Image (cartoon, rainbow, N blue to C red; front, side, top):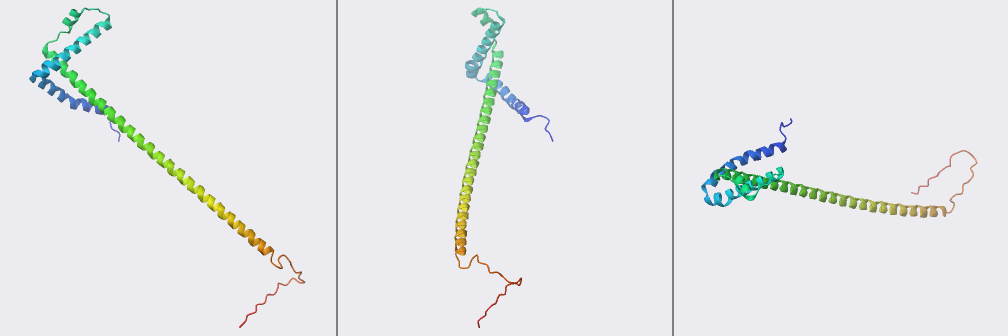
Length: 184
């Protein structure tokens, strides 16, 4: 059975769905805290808005002086709070995503390192087995040489025995008679 949606496409959607309530809670709670509202979110949103307007004007080739940019970038507090909360939420989402990528890369690197270590151990084991097999082959070759020397020694001994190689001419085709003397 094939899943209809690949996991790679499903995870970002789940992440957006999970973070959406957090963003909304952040927006609600920022209004209650004057420190975060006045010191962090509103100035950050206004700076972001000013920078985006400057970039937009520059990309369109429009030149404005500082006062004109200030007037264009002015935002009311409610809009600045919304934009500030969105910036913080997007930054948090970006950081979490970046951490997930870093964790995934470290897991992949650890898995690769473990795989390489296992391959190295397998290679060492095979080299050890090859050396052991070579030693056994050399031992067998030495044993064969020793047996060959013994066979030659026995052959020399048999050849040197009295009467070896002499055959008596038989007068008939009768088989040779063998007598067994049993002493009782």
